[in-house]
Amino acid sequence: KNEVEQSPQNLTAQEGEFITINCSYSVGISALHWLQQHPGGGIVSLFMLSSGKKKHGRLIATINIQEKHSSLHITASHPRDSAVYICAVLPYGQNFVFGPGTRLSVLP
Amino acid sequence: DAGITQSPRYKITETGRQVTLMCHQTWSHSYMFWYRQDLGHGLRLIYYSAAADITDKGEVPDGYVVSRSKTENFPLTLESATRSQTSVYFCASRSGEGPYNEQFFGPGTRLTVL
Figure 1: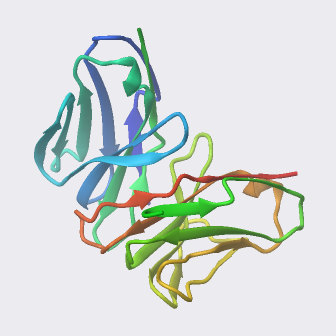
Figure 2 (figure 1 turned 180 degrees about the vertical axis):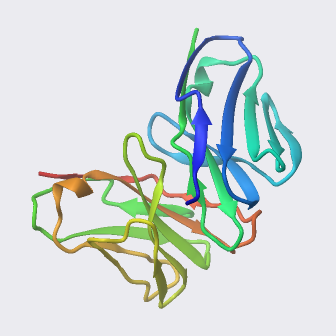
């Protein structure tokens, strides 16, 4: 069965801290996506990656295909980064499988 | 409006009633999906469609029916609602099945079954 795990489940940080959210999965995949779900419920895509590292502003996503692991880093965190971050993997020939999400709260 | 929309945004119904959740996208994306999101679970796929008139079951299809007579619409029907179907429902669309085809999500419908 395809499984996607995320850690931590919940994370509280002070503004300015460096944050890391981890994702591990159990099957071979063609890609991994990181999604952000805002407190109002909307879901947006942050990154799509299948190898290496991508950076967008203060967000960095990395993936190690051999170890079946990805990390999402947020540098200089800000209260507006407060959201649920969801890891989604795309197993070969299948639909997306989603992790349970990591709830991040950044305090001013 | 451009994008992907869902209606209604909030719905309260009673056990045994039929409920239809609507999803509409303006991009002419081939693929459309229905997910439910519950506490403690990731998004779980209910049904998906690769094109008009082509639908297939996902992980949790029981109690749900879908249709796709037009590319832009993908309604989800609960034929006889149960309390266990209380959830937040998300519709999504993608232009293709390649790994770098971004998936776009609707705003969600919060359904409560009493």
